[in-house]
Image 1 (cartoon, rainbow, N blue to C red):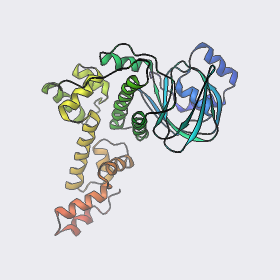
Image 2: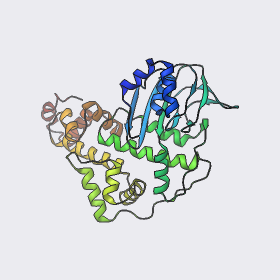
Image 3: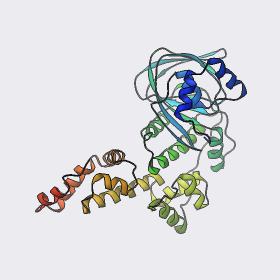
Image 4: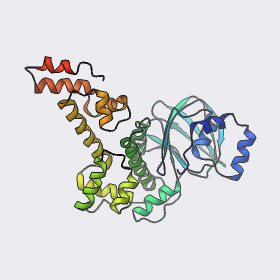
Length: 336
């Protein structure tokens, strides 16, 4: 999305006169973020926008009885927990479903419908432009994508799981988190083209990986300690490939997606620093590119099952059993 919305405009919209909102919609379709803020009468708890890939938002909202006006982006949503009845009316058509984990709802761009939700609920939403779908389709050498189908609490565990995975990284502002969201957004677009359009689309597996020279340049960029752009767009552009083909070729060459490779590389750097130096956890986090100690600790624990401090103690106990007491004292002041 070329013009990501900020929180203040969203909040201002909530208190704007309804007549003014109606006038806005006459001249152009609102962004999905703005229209959802109006309809849900709140702002998202968490939101991350990665132009031009898309945006992902996590909402908690109350009962809803309103018409969702045409939006500029497709909205794909899933439900983290619970069970809730949904009623959707489009013209003379009525769709009734149950919002629960493992199902998805799709509101195509430009469509309008009346919604009735009788109780509060949580929802994760992806805002995806038609341009992104067309890019993915073109990069995969497929025909122009068909229209997205309206879906109301439609069973699709794959799409639901992908969207929930993206929601886990909404708070991250590090390049690693953005790269992960970009990859997932492209993967979600691929899934939508295959499962939620009027025509069936099949994506063939990648044939061959990156050349040694191109792979070396990509890895050099990913390993860079400076402010090198490690977005999918930058990596693919340097390789002379589309994002779609770059991700597939990189995984063919390394066995890992660009995000998984970078995550593993940074984890190895962190482990070396924790094992071989007495640097504080904060220093290690900064050294490997995390904006905060909390973000680093959460990522480290997610991958290893331990906090950085616990991991350091365990590995040093194994490595230096005779003088563990002396070495542990050197890091006793380290903050988790």
